[in-house]
Length: 68
Image (tube, rainbow, N blue to C red; front, side, top):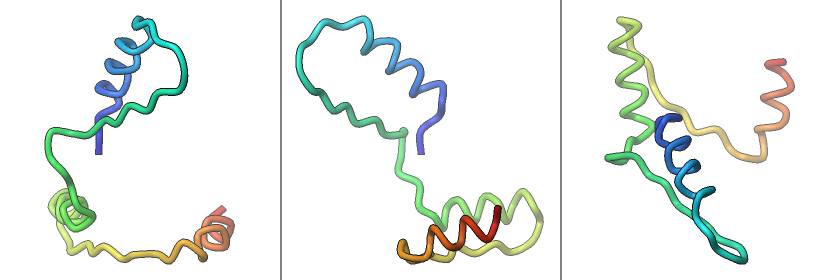
């Protein structure tokens, strides 16, 4: 997870640089955050249990369409 402000800051720095060709820049937050970390934070905010559940990639399209 990376803050949008950090993405913007890095993008602003990159567009001021001079280089040729294709370039891949990886951006990572100060520490890695797991899906369970995120569920725990939501549980704290909402005041009730929240759990993470992996969703198989092959079901994404149907799931997103069913949710509008």
